[in-house]
Image 1: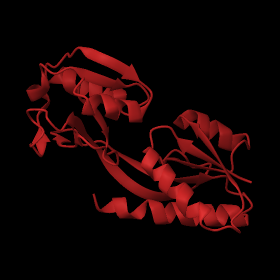
Image 2 (image 1 turned 135 degrees about the vertical axis):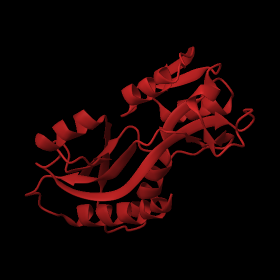
Image 3 (image 1 turned 90 degrees about the vertical axis):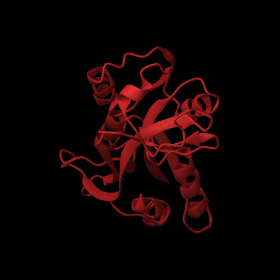
Length: 202
């Protein structure tokens, strides 16, 4: 059994695509998906509770072998019927009277808050959630707007840029340097590479 940790803020569609690709190979063995926050996955790797992690790759992850798969930015998520939904880039100040949804597990939550505050935007928060699928559903319903990594998409949601918000994250695979590569792990890593690359053109 290959135990793969998956970052909670990775789109469900990526994980489902990976599972479908891995499952096509009957000889690949079994994979166990373990969802967690970034810190939990690093701890799981260090303690041998998981074999690899699909998570954020940072310069200070040096104790783990890493393979970067994707670098993406962050963008707004607005309902398709939002007055600004047709814009490609929106200034923070243009959202001053908007209700917002907080993704409590966001890696750049503090930076997002500072960005809006520096532009005089102090919104009412209609919801605080650790579920990105729920955040997207609430956005599509028109409850509020939020900021998410660019890889997220959903019917009824548009993803314009947030002007001047240039943060990025690099998603990849972390493993312990001396980990023994099994057949299941080799196939899982291949399936991840097949899943992620099309998004690199964003």
